[in-house]
Image (cartoon, rainbow, N blue to C red):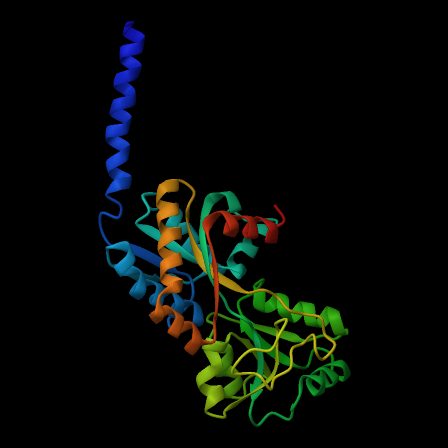
Length: 306
């Protein structure tokens, strides 16, 4: 046996000795799940339920940490600056990946690995119960006659919320005054307080006030009606073909080992199928949207035009 062959053998054995235990022992400590939305938002609630249910499948505690700012950029940059060993991961949304399409984006779609889509979370268009708008048609007709006068609130700028507003404007030829907020619940609070005319929200962010009779739902931005909004028409039903697919999931920095990504994808599949998580989805009016890593990655690439 030549000295080169022996040397290659030593290197191979050493590499296996160094690499295998790292993956076999993962996780070696609690995992931090960074959430880019505000505490109490629908996204935050999902993250905390993943942490609660996921611990029993992962074998280590999962700690949720909120890092707001820059429409997700602060959270993404933070995760990229951590050791890529899979002990710091990040919740993500369709709003977040839209940042990668910006001309001056400092972050790239290739900076991350996409572990799993977890839920689908539709939009509801809401007004205060005292609002003069009883239907989505009345709202749109008023906006048509008063360009730029209807104040509609949503989460952040250049987000899926704003995208929905722009799609509605384009579909029906109106001009709305979009007002961005820092958290998903803030537009709901604003419409309840009479500070804006209309708000866009996920069911988990407005369901309590809706069930208390303080909010009126004018339309849902989905292909079909869903509970508890069976009496609320879809935008498509009313002749406005707008139905964005809003989702939430988990991603990791690009240098996190594939074996860790695969493990987490399996864990999240178990989480979504867990009775406690299923009950959470039902109570929060979210949908099971689980996709494994390979399918989720394809979805992200498609939605960002890659």
